[in-house]
Length: 75
Image 1: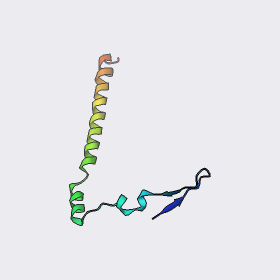
Image 2: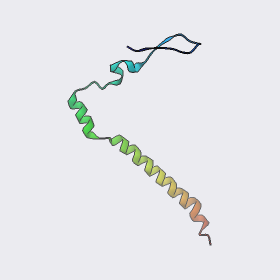
Image 3: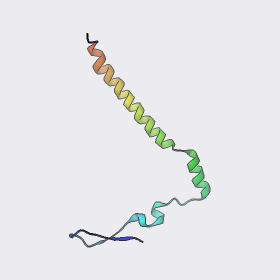
Image 4: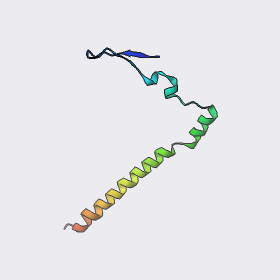
């Protein structure tokens, strides 16, 4: 277990990191479960990225049609 000494003058308490214990950072499963999870791919990351792109495009279109289009062409 890793114990780190505080270097601050106001406190001399010992601090224990939660990452020092394997059960706090490791996946407790078999190789088969890990392979199943890995085979599924990063679906959640793609969903969040797709949602962000959709929101950005919707805001851009709203800005275009609500601000620029009503002003008409210049010239």
